[in-house]
Image 1: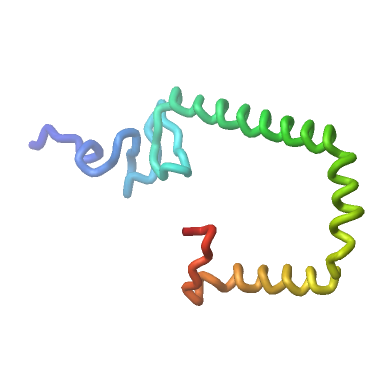
Image 2 (image 1 turned 60 degrees about the horizontal axis):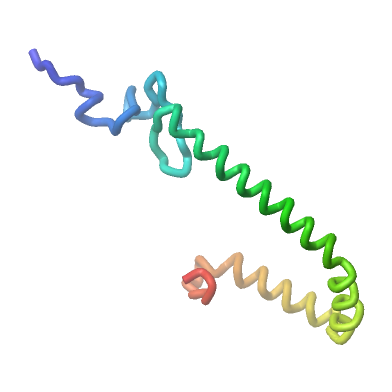
Length: 111
């Protein structure tokens, strides 16, 4: 008779069951790490959420405070662009980005 627990030998910490497909009591599944983590470790999500919300508030405040500058730029500088050419460029960009994984195109900002 073996004294070893088969879950301890095959699964990572907190994972149990067939193919280690469930989290044990006191653990929660985390998609970003693809593993089970102790429930107390999930609190870092709150800090990330607060940081994202703060960034959005700062961005909205920035846009509202510089609204006149942005409006003047849009009225004066963007008039020189042809809207048809911009549409063609945007559609071309979308097509290239949607099929780049098939063509193995290396995009400079994804490296």
